[in-house]
Length: 187
Ligand SMILES: [Zn+2]
Ligand SMILES: [Zn+2]
Image (cartoon, rainbow, N blue to C red; front, side, top):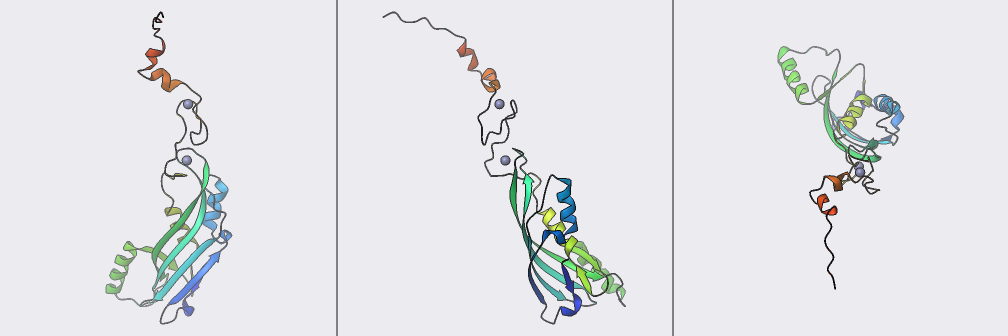
């Protein structure tokens, strides 16, 4: 589990630099079990947490790991480096006495940033960090910038193989030239 204990956050804040086994992130392991995207590598987490008023904790963090993910062009799975930063506000689920102004202010802040609600003295960051990792995956991941993808005709992986079909030749305006025969010059 990746947790921050409120009481360990001192006046100058709390710094955390940890490499955490991926098994500590239930969201990531459940995605991995579904098969398409998998997370097998440890997750490196760096966090700076500070308490502002009313037990509200501001968490600034950086997360890095690898995701094993299929390329959107060639469908070959590859290791995508994930390296992302986030800011989150953690608020207690039963805030003590807060006047209306403070609530309004807090609502504004939680709109702007990712919000985590905690109970007791510890903030569980497992799901928050998992979400950051998931959000860092591009919609159309590419195994390399110049991935050639698959041939529409024969399905060949054009990064590794040559196209096996001659559809492009058949559709080419020059294909008609193949049928022409020229009279041979007599010498
Ligand atoms: Zn690819
Ligand atoms: Zn082909």
